[in-house]
Structure formats: structure tokens, C-alpha cells
Length: 162
Image (cartoon, rainbow, N blue to C red; front, side, top):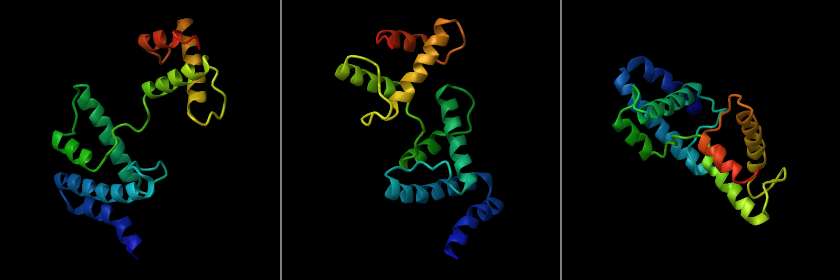
């Protein structure tokens, strides 16, 4: 019965509240979910299979508008909402950035003197796949094909002879 109440609550609130108040209700709901997830997982990121697709979609929209705000583009996200979301531990990035993997590569290279990361390397489990993807993107870049790598990333990777 309680589960049904929590499942229906967001839909009921959306019907009776103004858009301004809806935002605060959603943040309040996210706050309670964040506490639950933090206790359970150690972070408050919504899993991709989270049952409330509207909340997951809302979180994705907040991240997009935060990116727009940082780029100086038009955004519906206010500084107040950013502060509220920061206060509950909202994660603005869901993926680790390129620099995280590159840092792991530098550490690996210092230890082993090469960039031949074995599959299933336990210390940096994502590094094998990342380095292979970088090799592919570097090949595209050197052939003049569209590549996701920036010039500075290419220069950093060439320093390691991957």
C-alpha cells in the first residue's frame, strides 16, 4: 500500500500544483530518493533502470540545462535550483571524463612502461576498453576522418605511443 502511494504521489502532485511548485516538490522527492540511494549505494545517481522514468528524465533535463548554463546558452535552470540540487548531492556528470581515464593510463604507463593494458585489468577495469577506443579515434584522426578527439588529447596520447 505504501509503495503504491509513493508510486502515485508524483503524478498526483503534477496535476494539482503550478509548474513553479512542481519543481520544489520534485527536488524534495529527489532529496528523499537521494538519501535512500546514498544509504544503499554510497551515491545518489538514479540507476538507468529506475522505475520512475519521469524522475530519471527530469534529472537528465537538469544536467542538460546545467551544461547550457555553463556554456552561456539559454537555460531554464536557476542558480537557486543549482544550489538546491548541489545540497542534496546531485551529480551533474554521470560519466567520468576523459581526464580520469588518461590519468589512469599515465599511472599504468609509469608502472609497466607501456600502454598494453590487459583485458580485465583489476586496478583500472575500464582502462582496457578506453585505450582501445582511443586507438580507434586516433587512427581516424590521423586519416583525416571525423574523430571525437580534440587536438590536445591527440598530442597527449601521441606522447605515450599508444
